[in-house]
Image (cartoon, rainbow, N blue to C red):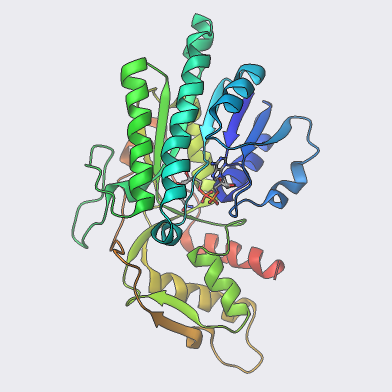
Length: 331
Ligand code: NAD
């Protein structure tokens, strides 16, 4: 049995679908069903006997501890987080609570459980914390990509809270020897993403004939990874990663926001041309920039490629076309 927290969100739900279809282990999804959750992402496995769901907040230490003791997982994967930078600027408190105190609560419960396992079970157990490239802060165009050794320089309440949680995980390994794994991943895209995030936001607004908002001049750069590639990387790290280590995951696919939006418009023009013959990119509207908007994130992924033999498979064009098609079918 493994426990996945935050499994009703975007990446967690994609991970659950992939895990259940490729492994024969049981999986328990623990999620507090925040605004970002969507259990219908998991409708097709709802009645799978190997899957179970518990509505619970990771901050509720007493309940989390009792659950872990009851189900005896061989691994806990922590996807649960407040994840939207704009929301962290409007209201940082839930980010501090879920991302920092929630991770602390899980670490505490995991350590109490782990300490009482047999020697063999102790060796097998993993606490896997899913994190982001944003902890490394903003890069300039000519800066080297961030490696696992780069200094943490978080700039937003979101990235600062994720950085704090990464540090807690590091400390629980170093001090208490809890067998932890941490992955820091670049921007994900694909099916089941919340409509507030850039790619689904642009697709849904485009289809409703609304303005396509782009922050500032649209030159900010992110690296993009198809969510299934991320899930495969997580499975690889869970299987082969070394306790105490952190792994960068990325698509080696840097694009400016404007490039991403133009590409979505191009795909929509071909898959769903407008009746009046106009082009979707005519809906683009530059809006006031996000405060403290980081210019560029980019990760060096050589460690996971060489040590664990993982590489992203999906190209940006094919992954984005699949993603646009998925949202089109549900519009
Ligand atoms: P998401 O916002 O789509 O999903 C988060 C899930 O966590 C939701 O189902 C929500 O209900 C749940 N949750 C939130 N607070 C909780 C709490 N206190 N207790 C229990 N459950 C709670 O996020 P996502 O995009 O799927 O991201 C998952 C993880 O991956 C996050 O840790 C995020 O920092 C990290 N990450 C995301 C990206 C990305 O591009 N989306 C990139 C790198 C890393």
